[in-house]
Every structure is written in C-alpha cells, then in structure tokens.
Length: 486
Image 1 (cartoon, rainbow, N blue to C red):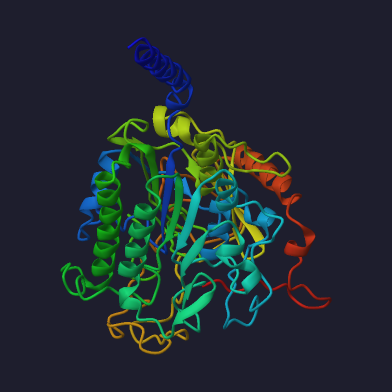
Image 2: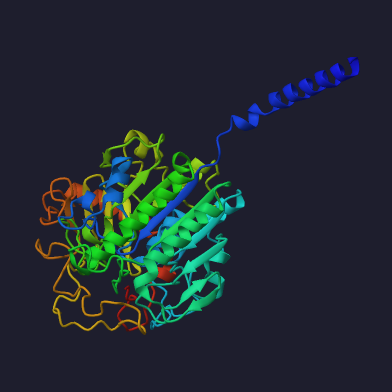
C-alpha cells in the first residue's frame, strides 16, 4: 500500500514538474502563417470594393471589411517581373537587378537572366526559419533552371514561369514540365486547388504561400464554371473567378482554425491592360501615370489588423518584405539596402508614411518621384499604349496552342482602362495627387520649389543606379534603347 502510494506521489510530482516546464513553450504564440495573393495586371478599379460598377467581388469585399483597404499603394514599375522581385526582396529594381521582363521568346533577356543568387528572398528567409513554402502561379524571375522558385527558397512550385502570353506556355511542377500546351481556362482553378492542398498539408506547421495568379493578364481565360456567368463580359468572368479563389483560401483557413493566425495580403503587380479599370486614374500598364503604378491592396489578420479600415497612407510593395519578416520574428538583412519599411503600424494604427519619397522606374531609367501629395514625372510617358490601334488589332503574342476558350472576346486597344485626357506629356511635370489624382493639370511652373526638392531626391537616387543599367543599349554614335516590357 505504501509503495503504491509512493509511486502515485512520484507520478503526481513528475506531472506537476512537467506542467511547470510547459508554460514557457505554451506562452509563446505559434508562428504566424503568411499568404500573398498577387494578381497580374489587376487595375486599381477592377474590384467592387474599389468602385467597379459591374464586377462583383464579394469575397474581396469581405476581406476589406474584415481588414484594411489601402488607397495609396504603389509598385515601383508598371510591369511584371521587376515588381515581383521587389515584392520578394524589399528592394528597388536597380538594386535587385531584375529591371526587365525575362521572356523565352523575346529578342532581349531571352536566357541566362533572372534573380541573382546574391539576392535574399522572403521565401529563403522564411524557409531557413522553419516555414513550409510554396509558389503557385507566375514566377517571372527567370525561366532557366538556376532561377527556378525551387532554387530560391520554395519547397515546391506549380505554374508558368513567365507571362501567360509568352511562348511556350507550359506548366511546371517543381522543375519539370507536366503539361503543354496549357489549357489556360483552368489555371485559376488549378492554382487555387494546389494552394488549398498546401494549406491542409501544412496546417500543423508555419507556412508561407505565395500565390501569383496568371489573371487578368492577357489572354483572359475563365473556367466553364465562370465563363459567361458574371454578366460583365470575359474580364468580369475572370475577376469573379479570382474572387472565388480568395474565398476558397479563407474558407480553408477557417475550416482548419488557422484564420486568426494567418496574415493575408492581396495586391496586384501593376496597373491594367485593355479592358481593365483604373477608377478614374490616368494611364495604364507600362505607363508611369497613377493608372500604371497605383494598385489595390487589402490586408487581413483577425485580431491584429482592425477591421473596416480605408487607409490613405502612401506606401508600396517594397514594404511587404520587412513587414512580414518582423511579424515572423526574423531580422531584416543588414548587409544590403532594404528600401521597404515596416507597414504594420500603418495597417494597425494608420501611421503616417516612413518614406520621404517613393520612386518608379521604366525601362532602364528612373521616371517618377512621389513625396507626400506631390508627384514629379522626370520623363514623359504616354497615357495610352497602341493609341492608333482599335478592335482589329492583332496581338503579336497570340495564344500558344489551344490555351483559351474565348479567343474572340479578348479586350482590345479600343477599351483603354484609364483617362486619356490631361496636359500633354512633357519632361518635369508636377502633379498634386490630393487635388488632382487623375494627373490632369501640370503645376510645375506654379511650384518651382517643389520641383527643385523632388528633382534633388531624384538625382540622389540616380547615383545609386548602376551605370550598367543606366547605359544599357547605348553604343557610340547610336541612340540609347530600352527593352520592351509586356
């Protein structure tokens, strides 16, 4: 009896001792999960919660209502690849080196170009700190094997390595081609299914899901479940399916009780192509007007980010890198310039911007400087591309094989997404974006002191652009050229 009592006492002692050693572990909250959903060529006004009069986006509306919707979120370039590299490095294109669009069928940057091994990506730092990582969708940081996502911090990959109008349009799983040609109508659905599968596979450990969708980049394509269902044309069908995808992600998080431990960001890489909407901003993709550089951004994290916020703080995609690292408890690299700032005070307290200025690039040149309400266009940019073309325009990058279900419903140059009015583009144009968000009236002559201040900021940053970039394509006796960006 006494021995049994001793054994019982010992067991009680061991249980109490063990329980006393647990609180230190239990008191530490689980590492948060991170999801970045990055649309391709989605315009500032392409979502219902950003004012589109026809497109319905109930899931993104709900995301905005449950978190923060930003109205002054900028990308550093008005086209694809450099914007993506900036998102994942927190650095401007002239620092990370991807200031162009790699293209397997292009005249320039066809092979041997992409994100350098010396760059440190968000995926790499998170993976080093115990995160499961997955990239699903468009990569566009190099299509040769040494640039693959699986060589830069991602455990797995599913997607097209570049834009869906570049050839060959083939689907990569890991590092192998698994489908050619791709049925593009199924891309959004397939990407979503793989993303949901990844979340379920890693529900017991911290994860980073990077979901850069193919849509609504041309050629537009929607699955049979959404094609001709929105009542707003093919573009509306595509947006509806993207919204469905977001809904599936949140449904999965809630089902697995991961919702309150997951920080989700939804944004776009640049402004819209034809058929899109800029919500009254000037210009479009591939231009340095607000329609090319300002994009929608919604952030949601229940219990961390207060709901129903509309935030007007000037910030940008360069800020995502340090923001996520801080929330993950990972030190921001100190051996290189990180241009981004921690965005969390903005998302939680609507703090003012930490940026004295934001810069944009087009081709191999700096184009604009944004400081507070002021924006200076150092170089002129057209408000519309293919201005002399109409609905009969033939896209030189037509679909590769049987890739889309609506080849005759693609948006054409007669459907410009942004305003075409305003003062004629010239160098050194100044706009007050608080008073004139559509950039209609050049006020440079009325504010020479502002022009001088922003020009000085430009010149200081220009010294940090490598000569190899600034002088790209320049030959003695020949005019400097810049690569085309699609």
